[in-house]
Each structure stands twice: as C-alpha cells, then as structure tokens.
Amino acid sequence: MQMILSQRILHFLCVLVILSLMSGCNKKIMDYEQVTPGEKIVLKFSHVVAEETPKGLAARKFAALVEKRTGGRVEIQVFPNSSLYADGEEIQALRSGAVHLIAPSTSKLSDLFPRWQLFDMPYFFEDTNDIHSAMRGSIGHTLYGDLEKGGIHPLAFWDNDFKQITNRIKPLKYPEDLKGLKFRTMINSTILEEQFRLLGAKPVQLKFNEVYSALSAQTIDGQENTMSNIVTQRFHEVQPYLTVSNHGFLGYVVMTDNKFWTQLPPDIRAIIEESMNEVTEWEREQARVINERDMTILKESGKVTIHIQSPEEKAEWKKALSGLENKLNDIVGPQFSNEIKNRSR
Image (cartoon, rainbow, N blue to C red; front, side, top):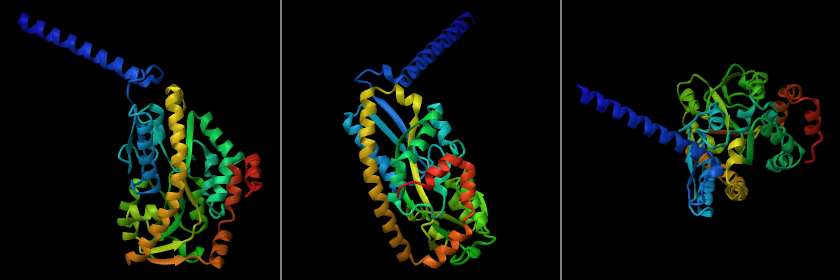
C-alpha cells in the first residue's frame, strides 16, 4: 500500500514538472522580442471566406512570401472559411492571442469602430480608385487612427469589389420590388440595416458562414455580395435572381494586435510590411479579375436571371436611400462628415 502511495505521489510530481515546463514554453513563445535568430515563429491568419476568393488567395500568397523571405523562420498558417473563428469572434480571438492576423470586412468593425461604416454607404464611392484615394488621404488616416487607439495595428486595406443583390422571389429593378423581403445583412452595421429598411425590406443580421444555409432553408429571401463570394459560396444555386447594382463596396482591413506587433523582432516586422505591401497591389488586381470572371460564370451557369441596373433605376434607388446621409452624419460626427464630403476625387 505504501509503495502504491509513493508511486502516485511520484506521478503527481512528474505531472507538475511537465505542466510547469509547458507553461514556461508558452510564455517564451508569446514574448517574440526574446526569440533567438534560429527559433521559428508560427503565426495564425484566420478569415471567413473561401480560399479561391481575392482575400483567400492573397492570404496564401502573403504567407508563402513571408516564409520565403524569412528563410522559413516565420510560418503563417492560414485558416479560411471560418474554420477557426466566425464573424464576430475574430477580433476577440486576435486580442486574446488565439490568432495573430485577421482580415474582417469594414462593416464588421463597426461595433467597436463606428466610423468604418462609411464604406457601407450605397452609391457613395464612384469606383475603387475613389476608395483608394480616400484611404491614402486624411480619411484613411482618421480610420486607421481609430484602430490604433483601440489596440489594433492595421497592415493593409484589401479589395473585394462592389456588391450586387440576389434573391429567390423575383427580379429587383426598383426600390419597391424589395418591399417585405428578408435580406441578410453583415453583423454590426447600422447603415446596412437602415439601407434595407429604407428599401422596404426586412434586414436580418447573419454571420457569413450561416448565409448559405439560411438562403437554402428560405428563412431569408436574399442577400448582397460580390460576384466572387456569390460563386464560391454557391449562393447562385439557391438565388435565381441577380441585380447588378454595384451599390456598395466590400473591402477588408488586414490587422494584428498592436501589443503583439510591437513584440515581434524588428526585422520580422519589416519583412511582414514589405510583403504585405507587395501582396496588396497584387490582391487588388486579382479582385478585379476574379469578379469579372465570376460574373461570366454566373451568366453561363443557366441558374440565374441577371438584371443590370439602368441609370434611371439607379437614380430611383439613390433617391430612396438618400436618408442614409443623415444617419452617417450622426454616426461619424460633423467634423469627419465634412471631411468625407469635401474629399478630393
């Protein structure tokens, strides 16, 4: 009996030693300033869209470029399609250190950083050049400053493209055609909810990974998205009507936690920034090419009736949505509102 008791005590002490060693190792891994030159750094990059989208392809290219330029010292593991974290979970995961890089859409920042709802405004930006110009100037400086104050370090602004509208009921040509229909909106955005209310529709907030099942089960009638997301998520299989409206922009902010960023060795930070800048230019071109390609795929699928919004129809939609400017002013404040209105194009 005494021998059995001694063995149990010995086993317990061994477990304590192992746990202590593991705890020490975890602490060392998180303190990247203390990483020796030969020690490998593993970073997790989580996002919610498919691998073959502009964001998915850019995340993979970025990971490969960083690994190559660091000689394998840094490995970036990419987790697409909400395989690690879904909408609404990513920022908390970033701040807790569970992941190190995320790329949420601008809409999903709105809960913590309301001024990013600027990009949810329909028919507000003429094209991607207008958007990039805004982000290079004082508007981008203000928006990035909001993130920094919140402990987030922004690394890049990536494109997807302008959004289109799909539904299962009928062609949508005029604002009144949306009356009574249920449309999915991205989480956290007051502007997107109000957009559909002004069009007479009923907004339903859903996480991105829940949209296909909701469309398939007909618990919602439609959604808005880019061509690449419509194709890769197979929305067109359960949404027979598509209106090409190009009404709202869908973009992403690639970001990391500010405290984590400052702990990385300076040479690693420099390589990450250099690689990110290079990939961002590539990603923007890919967004244009992929969305044009996926428009062709939708045309040739035989599953979708496509209506291209005319200038007259666009004017009707803009008129119906004109009340959103007052809503935006309330959200962003008068000073930033004037800055937006007076931006150079």
